Amino acid sequence: MRRTAAQSGITEDTWATAKHQVRSAIRHAAYERRMTWHAEIANQVDIIRLDPESSLMSDLLAAVFEDEYATGGPALTSIVTVKYGDREPSSAFFTEARNLGYRFTEPLTFWAEEVRKVFAEHGRPDRRG
Image (tube, rainbow, N blue to C red; front, top):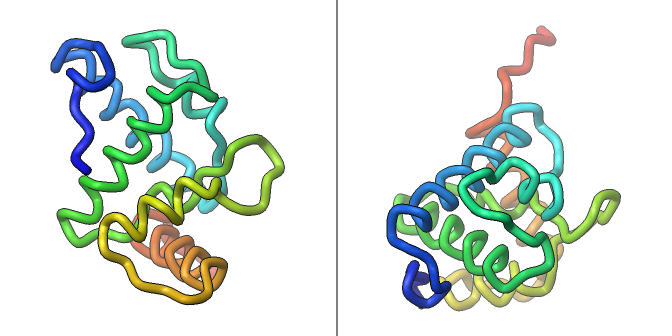
């Protein structure tokens, strides 16, 4: 299901900017090769007030996931957890993955592989050598 601004009750420009800011926040964490969480991302969105536990946050994360899937990229949102210190994504991550067409029997194995792919593609180059 493609998420839209109208479904979230905001303008197209605000939606596009908020989605860009969410993606940028996730990519920043990915570059640092670390997990991030909803509140950290919400704090980096300044176009709107974004509650980390809101349906708008969920919609923006799902939209970023959809965009990455459409371009053949790894599941960027795999590095996003609900709160600081969580070790796994929310159940919505797995639901969205299945809605997009990913097939897996072991959710945690699928998730771990996507995290690895995100860090490989977006992470700071490993300077150990």
